[in-house]
Amino acid sequence: MLERHKSAYSSRAKLGLITPPTNTVNEAEWSRMMPPGVTFHTHRMPLHPDTTSEEGKAGLMRDLESVFGMLKPARVDAIAYACTAGSMINPVESLPEHLTSSMGVKAVTTSAAIIHSLKTLGAVRLSVATPYHDKLNHHETEFLQENGFTVENLIGLGIGASGPADYVRIAETPLEEVAKHVRAAFVPGSDAILITCTDFPTLPLIAELESEFGVPVVTSNQATFWAMLRAVGIEDRFEGFGRLLADF
Image 1 (tube, one colour):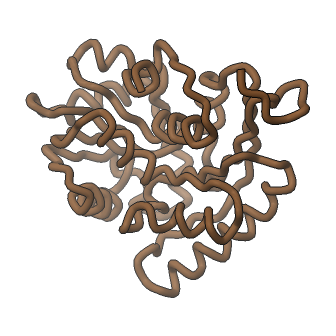
Image 2 (cartoon, helix red, strand yellow; image 1 turned 120 degrees about the vertical axis):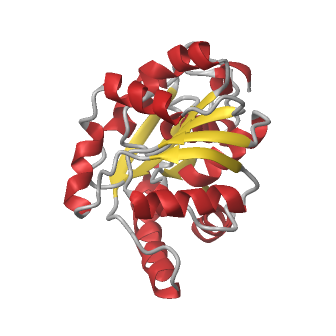
């Protein structure tokens, strides 16, 4: 077994995790998936709603480099920027590649992890469920299409339409409501179901939904976790968290 650190808990790997300030689901779901000998270490960062203008991208980069600088002294082996909408920048690998080069530590973004996951699964036609409002849903649809996917259906719950303070409601969505929302989004003939947002509770539903619909389910937290493990050379397989982590 790979042993990278002299640590009672982190002998195999230390993972850095950057989340939005209101996020309480990402850590809860990662803690349920983390294999022995691997730990993760978290820092929060402000939301960046503007990732399209040069000024917006510059602001995002300043904050990311600052937080990377805070996590690096913990000797983490990779750092994930785990904000789905906030990392949807094309070309999709441009942000993680820049951070890896400039900060000297492997960088993963949730959006890039999602794209990589879907392509690894061979999915093209997608049914997508989000907690977001229309503006973010439109942004996500364009992002997925620009990366070669066909969005058969994408629906959101409208959370955040009244402003960022509303985002705390995402984590409060009951699992049964999330499942109902996914069922409403699914279009027969889709290659995969995509459920986005790292603060949207989904982990206990993945296996159930895959069994019900017969297609892989990719979620923001699951895909980012998978990408981070593979980035640091950990090839463990897991049952109960979807085909992505069981087979790839």
